Length: 248
Image 1 (spheres, helix red, strand yellow):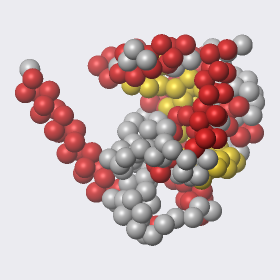
Image 2 (cartoon, helix red, strand yellow):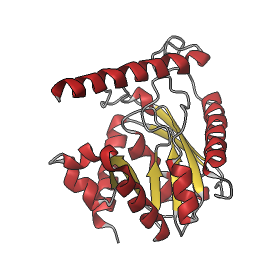
Image 3 (cartoon, helix red, strand yellow):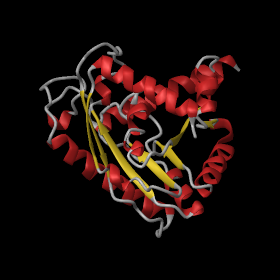
């Protein structure tokens, strides 16, 4: 029994109803009913993780998400995150977070991971970190690719949040399990290719607004291209590093 998680899910669904969010979920039956698995999710907005857990409710399971340590340090969100048994990620001590995730997987848990590590400003699939693949290989569990589309319209990087009643459609697709029978580099590339193909498929059935900020340039939107977004991320990272160096 997971009374806290069940309560939080109930509250989230109430919020989704009030917001008028319209979910389309495909492939939920691919979430394993038992045993560990890495749930790899694309990252387009701050609310992704609240939607990514919906397919897992088909087999009545819960996902333990890896999230940055700062969320756990907050006096409001911290106790909730710990009660839900999510995994804090401290970038200064990443090995500890990684090992905790592997242990969760070995105990038969579903662990949610963002292979892109950060929100994609282009809303395309960014380059992947190898952590998801390495976890799956070490724990001996499959990777379940999950693609979410429309979450960026609710709240994404660089734009105001839209948490009121927007009636936003959000599409979620769950792919076939990928067994960890390749080296980490090859498995990572297989996962990225699979999720890129899934994203294109999901987008095909979604109504896009020409010129809208939340629509990729490839589809006629005003979002930056993947290359432009990568340059923006690099500039932001350099600015943060310079600021840290200045404080020291």
